[in-house]
Amino acid sequence: MPYDPSNIFAKILRGEIPCVKVYEDDAVLSFMDVMPQAEGHTLVIPREPAMDMLDLSPDGVSALMLATQKIARAVKKALSPPGIMLAQLNGSAAGQSVFHVHFHILPRYAGIDLKLHAREMVKPATLEPIAAKIRAAL
View (cartoon, rainbow, N blue to C red):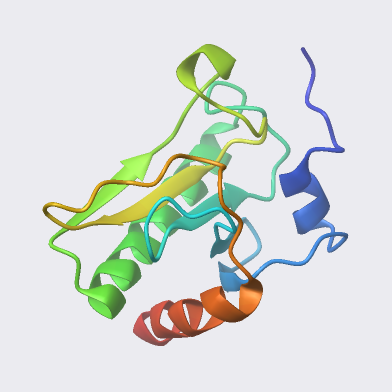
């Protein structure tokens, strides 16, 4: 299956769909997940069109990993969770639902379960104060 330029993340990259941005540079974009599994659930995507990590160029992988680490550190600093979970899924059998490679950064707290993925949408006005804390920590 070839890369589909009409996927939601490609539309976000082109500015066709709004997002609550956390960070961007020439190689990546990071924004809040509108269906968060935990408060502070942040996504990091490359600007390069690639379905999964196996399709991403070596330079794209490097940029994506470096940005994910940078943003995960900011999430930890801003929200003070005792743990950070990074999730990156490749293929529908692995649970990937948007076929543009991406990382999930999920703050984790003991005794608090993750919400089910892609179930409940949160308004941007709710996400913006959290994103502002993360941006301030960058």
